Length: 219
Image (tube, rainbow, N blue to C red; front, top):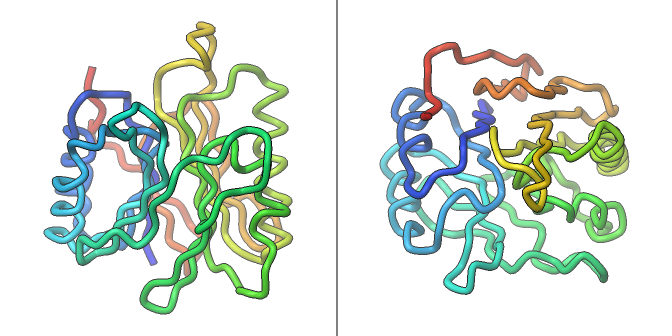
């Protein structure tokens, strides 16, 4: 499987997603950050997935401006959707879905810190996604976040992938480290990126990463 890991700038439309899916139509799946688009674009995102035969994993804002989980399959059907788990408490369900023989786990942003317990079950997970809103607000948070993702990869013997937006900061604190990562089932880093927001394509078979050099980000 080929997975595009994108770190777009926050925007009010789908321009960056459209550019990337049009220019990388051979990928099987696209991972985009938390709250990438508003609910009014949900139908259009579904149509893009169907048109380009590509699974889309991201997060969106509902009409109340609350964050929600989203996986759309390559037929344009929503196969996983729910509210974001509150910071305190157990991980909301569903957080697992299966499609075409692949079992996906989903942790939305800070849910990564609820994943060790929340994803425990008898189901074997192939890939766990962690769409992130904005970058890290400190080096310590960066270490904690990537360390937690690594633990989850080892526990579930699965790939764990995450990506934040290229811009923005936590509660507008003014400091941000955009990140993207992928750990394999042994906890080895296939991708561990900080302050480098170039689009990448991960080959899950060869465990290699290709950097996309053409300009896809907007100002």
